Image (cartoon, rainbow, N blue to C red; front, side, top):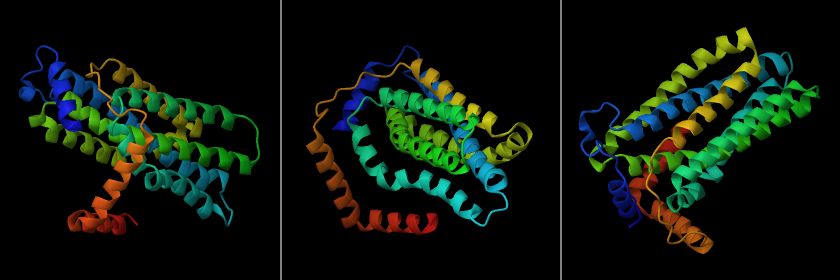
Length: 261
């Protein structure tokens, strides 16, 4: 029902010239804007995380016997919200205005990294510096758990059903390319310019994403169950129960978990 409502809204709000987008490489104007913002954000996010690992390992904790622990703490802070928040975020996003959610998460992440940049420029102890880095990474990752499912929901709103597989392919390919290209760019940027420039670049990437989202004409969603927390928890429980009962979902989930670990 929810996906059908989104599709009806999308069809009702397509701009002229978007009814037959198959000949466009990036499908239509709205998706092209969405994808261009994702390119910048994905690349900035990978550069950000790589820079922090390099900075802690080669500068802040260089020569100490606890350097591996310090680096691992950043990776844990990045991964923890994926385990704790992602299932709940998916239920929340499905009943929300996804474009507004993405705008808020972009603004929140840009403000967090900008604040971290200002904090790290001030004199402070090493322990406080590491705490500020880990806290920022944790909150940025938490915001991403809401942004990422909203991204795929917005693709469903903006792209005709026949082209949604191609649009999702563009999105996944963009992230995969960023994970390869990001570290290749992060290392020379860090050693040539220092960590503050990498942080400023990542904050700027979220600003670019925010601005591209503002120019997108998305359908106005309907929220028949907005604010009903009980329904959110019920749907989350139903989703977890389905994943546990369905052998295909269960095997795929366990296999991916082992592979990721």
